[in-house]
Each structure stands twice: as C-alpha cells, then as structure tokens.
Length: 425
Image (tube, rainbow, N blue to C red; front, side, top):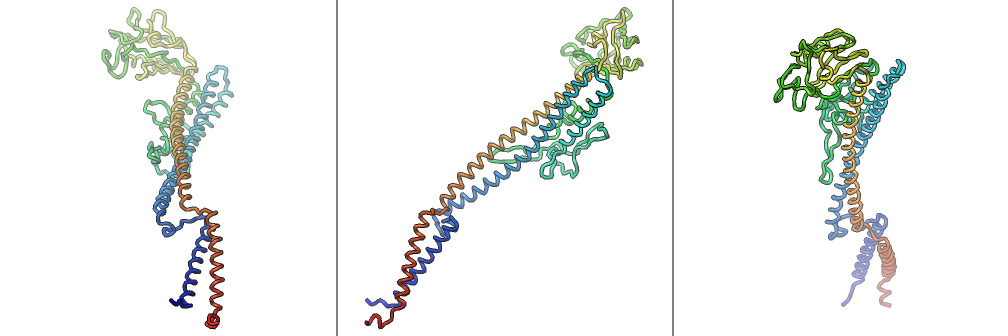
C-alpha cells in the first residue's frame, strides 16, 4: 500500500495540534493550580465538586450570619456590662449615703454622682449596632428610644417596644438576637418594682431631700389573713381593729375606753378600736404632725414617712397599736436607704439575668461558628483534592509534552524540506 506524502503530513500536523493542546492545558494547570475548571475536564468528578461548591457557599454564608449575630450580641453584652457597673456604683453610693455623719457638701457630691449614673444608664439604653438601637425591639424609631425627662431627670421615657429583634436559625438552632428593654432595665416590671432609671432617681431624691421613715418590721397580718385589701377566707376587705377573730399577727388590745392612743412627736392621736387600717392611716396623716401614713396591701405593712426625724410610741394607757403595726420607736433615714439598696439589688439581679442569657446565646453562636468553620475547612480540603493540580505530576507531563512537541516540530520541518527528487535519489 502506498502512503501519500500529504497523508503523512496531515497526521504529523494533527499530532502537533494534539501535543500543543495538551501542552497549553498542562501550562494552564500549572499556572492556575487547578486541574478541574469546567465539566469537560473530568465528568466523573464534576458532580461531587459542584455539590461541595454549594455546601461550602451555604456554610460560609451561615458562618457570616453567625459572625454578624455574635457582633450584635457582643455589643449588647458590653452595654449590660456597663449597666452592671452603674448599679454597682449606685450601691456603693447608697451605702455611703446611709451614714448620719454626712453633711450638705457630702450629700451634694453624692447627688452629682448619681445624676451622672442616670445619664450613663440612659446612654446604655440607647446602645447602637449597625445603625440599630439594640434595646428598642422592633420599633423603627429614628431617634434614641430612651429619653430623660427633665434636668436633672425626674423620669425616663421609652419609645421602643418589648419585642425581640429577631432570631437566627443556624445549624438547626434558634438563637435570639437581642434581649428586651424590660428584661435588661426592669422597665414596667410585672412585679411593680422600679426600673433601673427610677431606682437611680429615687436614690438621688432620697439623698438630696432625705425622707425619714418608720416601716412595719414584718407583715401585720396573721398567716393567711388580710387586714385590709382584697378579701380572703375569714377576712372582709376592710377589717376593724377589734374584729373577732383577729386577723392581726399581734391581737390589738385597746384601753378601757375602747380606743388606741398613739403618740407621734409628742402629739397624742386617738383612734377608736372600731377603725380599719385605712382609717388608722387617714387619722395619722391628718393629725398635723408632719407624718404621712400609707398601707401596702401587697406586703400588709404600714409605713410612716416625714421630712424630718420623728418619734412614735403608744401613749401611757393607750393600748398596743405600735406593737400591732410592728413600728419602731422613731423615723430615720436608714430605712429609706435600705429600701433603695433593696431596689438596686433587684435591678442588678434583673440586669445580670439578662446578661447571663445573652452570654449563653454567645456561647451557642461560638460553638456553632466553630463547627461551621471546621466543616468549611474540611470540605475545602476535599474540594482541593478534586480540583487542585498535582504539581509534580503536571510538571513531569508538561516537560514530556514539551519534548515530544519539539521532536514533532523537528520531524515535520525535515519532512517539509523533502521533494520528489529526494525520494527518487
């Protein structure tokens, strides 16, 4: 069989084209470091590779979401940490204010410091992250949601709402992105206890204009009884002092005239044994002795308050009303400060509880983020094993292809130089 010169030349040219294409492909792999860049490169691996691409993209986005949520909660935690410091400082000032050795200058200094703490608390209430107030709930208010009313503040207003700002669903776990204003600042608490702001304002007012107080040392009602307020078994809403059976922890014992006589600042106040606790409070408040009496139905306690020190005692032969009411012998500033300390402690516990929840959410996000980062790293390594070029193998193949291509070019060049006469001779 005779092979034409043109056929040999065509085969040689095709071989050169194949070698050139292989040479270019190996060069691209070495320069890019990737052996799989399109489906035609390796159809058997492309399905797994595309699946890994999608998985890594999803995990990377989840990791980004977790990072953003972590940053938001970290800002919230920082604000709650600052608020904790504010309340701890207020507690120290309240303890200092409980001393009877304070003069006007000392009180003025404490008042100034508490006003500063109020401003700081308002500032923490208006903490922002990425243009959003972290304690405003879902309210789209454009201005700071917490505003001090008055200068110095007499109250604080809040224009946000108590909704949680949202949740992040990550790795099958729902994580809240915020805490509520009520949970952090005890604002409008269900139990009626004062908010962080009102607690600080009350402390300042007490230091600035001391209130003298004499409160019942314990509830005056017998166990399970109500002496005044909502009705319960065995006790009508308003029970007279001489009720039988007695709803009082200490049974009232009037004098021979069926009266009680209580002495406040040297003034005798006569109270009939048929009076209720509400009438007792009214009689004391209207006696013109500079003392106001109030009864707390929830705690079943009586409180006497005044703007200056006062004494309280049963008049000689006047019965045992002070014992029934569990009152001390005088009103002082220590009890109001004790109340402030109790309110500060309550507000601090509320803030710490909110901070603990935020901390738990941060721990959850940290754990999930770590899992996601590990998964992304593992999947990226698998993806690299599929896509990345083996430099050693590719270099060897590249060199061999280069040598073969050079040989093919050399052979083709020699063939092109031959003529019919070269073969005839």
